[in-house]
Image 1: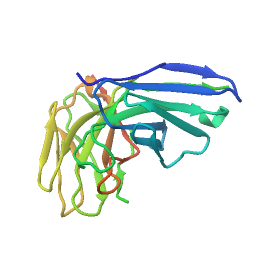
Image 2: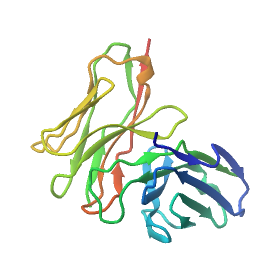
Image 3: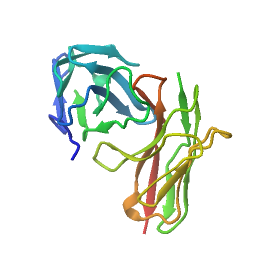
Image 4: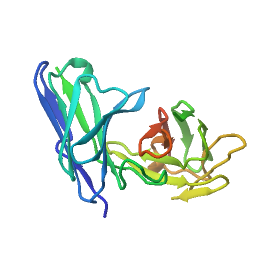
Length: 117
Length: 113
């Protein structure tokens, strides 16, 4: 069965802390994504990776960075957490790489609800 | 890139009522269209999809038909259950050749007994 896991369901951090959110998929997928979900705004793409060590900025990359050293793992890093980064963070993966069929499905993890105090 | 507009919620229904959640899109060509569902406390999961015009996607009693004439992909269910209470997202690829999806803002469905 397809599985995307995220390291924490709930996380509370203080302003200025460095925060790591981890995502692991076991489906040998090439693409991985980080979104944030906020009420009234839906899902917004933060970063996208289509291969190991490859990344592309999404719609709202400011204040975030990512790391993909292994195919199955995609990390989101908040270099200096701020209160406006309080949100639900969702990781997703899909099968194929940069040039792909438009029919591929994205599979989501359960989400990490991050609160920055 | 492509875009999607989804009706605002919440949609509040009694059990066994008929459900429609509207979704319209703007796209180049005829991309695949998706409905995702998010149950309370969980991530999104694919509910159904349609890969070409006039296709009907269906799953768990939900249906949506890809209508290119009206650029719509409305989600319907004939008889909702309390367990259908969730947030529903319409989505399509941002552009051709890539895997990024653009999502609607989501519609919350609340079903009461």
